[in-house]
Image (cartoon, rainbow, N blue to C red):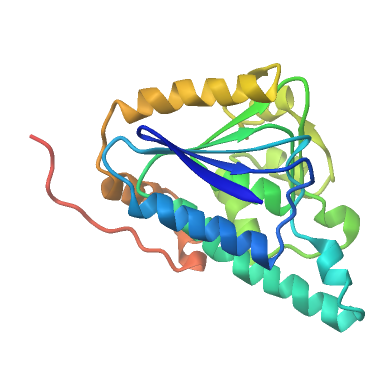
Length: 240
């Protein structure tokens, strides 16, 4: 399902297996638990990288699990359960006391894209993988924290329109132009992870205080953090 590996100062969170890495309650709980482990072991210079195996980074919520309830009302209830239980995952990433990097090995769709955008940096492959918000195509409304994430992390109205209102599948080079990802110059999953490790090592060398870093991050996204119930802490102990 997913694993957490510690390599010196770096934490590598991996969505395992060759499936679509769909988020059902068990998967969500596991990711949240592993983020909690990373937070508890954090120190100056810690960095988190999140990636996946196979064709997909994540294809979002497990809609098949929702539909297996056997009724429309049951499916809606299960979908609501996933939306609400995923919110703490987004909050945990924004509150994590270290820089975070998403190494997109493949497609990131719907809640999978939300997981990616919850990181500070996004790297994509140039040969495979798209960003895709499927809600307009499949007839689902947008959770409030999803919409706030898009407003917080995607800078222009034109780019937000492309992501949310066109159902467009955005490849790496276009995602860089739209300002959604930082890099899409990598020819393989191994290449994108290698590139993110290089960035992570540079960030780790800064040895920033994690709680200060997290507080500054949260101050950048006040609307999103208010929805998630996060507050930025004020620190007044500057390094002299």
